[in-house]
Image (tube, rainbow, N blue to C red; front, side):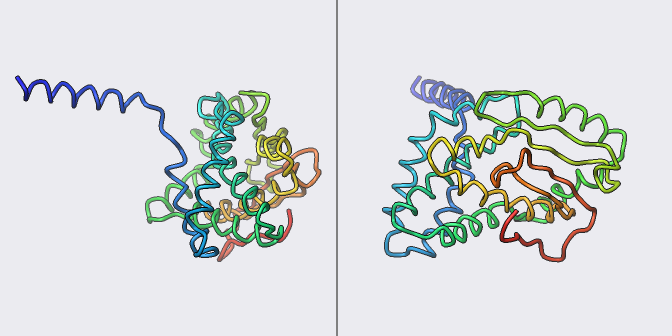
Length: 241
């Protein structure tokens, strides 16, 4: 009887765990901790505790992102963790450039593929551009990204006109940026541009060179992502976008 009871308890725990919301922070927190340990070895624990507390305080602003109908809103959770880090470092009196350096170090470490399979998977969508399945997926993605899942989220559109996309047939216009909205709401709008710089690295990893004339974070009406099928040898982030 005791064995059956333990088995039932085990099955109930598995079922409860299956329905328990996954905390996205678990996938990226270690990259923040690694950078904080490298830059502030004497204060790592206290700083991470402050960042965690700030992140929890921001959950009311970004909780919608986990269930939003717009898939681009998913990135708001990690954006909230970056915002918390920025608030903590700014409170310590760190300069904009020092904060930028640390944030880009974290982001670059996070987005880089860790295995050959991950690298292949990130390049696969680019290889499919122009195929029938790609055209179907882009139409579907355009509908999803164009939907306002929440007033504080993203709104985007897919651009497939080859004349507007260097002949590639794929580009993205971000018309409303959820990250900018979040940062501006908390008085840190000028720091949102830091995360824009990571797009150059993610594009390079996918096998593309990003060409962009402006971003909402830097005062443009939209963020226009255009690409050339020319992968840089070592994707780098420019000083400004």
